[in-house]
Image 1 (spheres, rainbow, N blue to C red):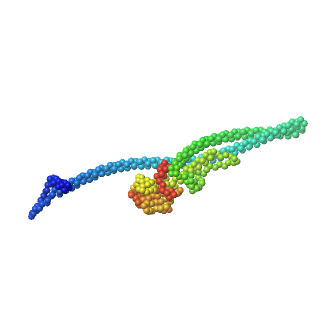
Image 2: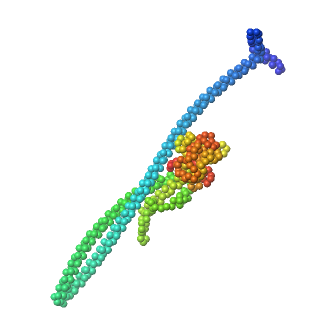
Image 3: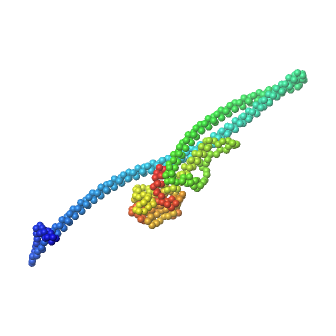
Length: 440
């Protein structure tokens, strides 16, 4: 059966491809090459397969080229959208920076207003004490004068009675003359006392007018202070709200952190010294003084928050053009303990908080690595750098340039691997960056 099929196939090939002879002639002889039907069929089939393969390969290559062009255009569109978004974020960041600068200016103005208000309050208190002292002196003098006047009247009445008795007994002429002289002296004294009383009454009226003027000044000062306090309290609330939200967003124990900062900065003095007025007896503390001290306490809290924020890595490490390439979390079957930002080689890298450099050199897969230890148990790491600009033991400030972006260590391209560790455990850096987006 198989042989029959083979013979039929062979006859079909011979009919389609009859035997051919290819003659090769030279000067001395003539040769020929016999081309059997099977050889012709094999050669023709091979040529057809080669031609088909060439056509298919060309089509595949053309389709791949067209697809690559579409992907390239899509990548360019995505890049344009991403750059537009980066520009928007940069604009928002600049706006937040301007707002922060304006908040600091308002804070400085508030401090100046509080200092000026303290001076005005002290001056007003001194004027009030002087006026009260003057009124007390005037009142005492008036009481003494009135007492002397009453005594003089009693003496005059006594002398008049004696004079009447003397006249009734018909005294001698010399005693009558003495009594008349004494009576004249008493009359003159009473006239002088009446004049002094009138002068003293005018002085008291002037003192009352002065006290009314002082009271009016105090009311006007109280109204001005109320407006100043309201503005300061609004500014403090506006400054504290985003800072509170920033600390809450990362779950920080603000009370213990602020208390630790307060212990570290325990110096006193300057415009934030609380108002104190001396009081005698059981006199109550002035409500304005209490309110001023409350405002100063809030301003002190804002200052402590600012100091704490500079020591916690809320800032962004990259300055310049960049893009986010890999986030915190599982990656390639293992935990990625930081956030990657790609950019050109040499892109400036900045410290995200105040701290001390504890490592500056190569370390395994990190390549060129900088470690900075911060307060409150924080540590930041900056890996794959092309250049390190700090040394171990250096104290760096938030925003200070510490290195350049590079491609050292286990890296597939130029980028920064940025880590935040709390107590030695890696946390998501993006949570801190997003929390501070509306503050810094």
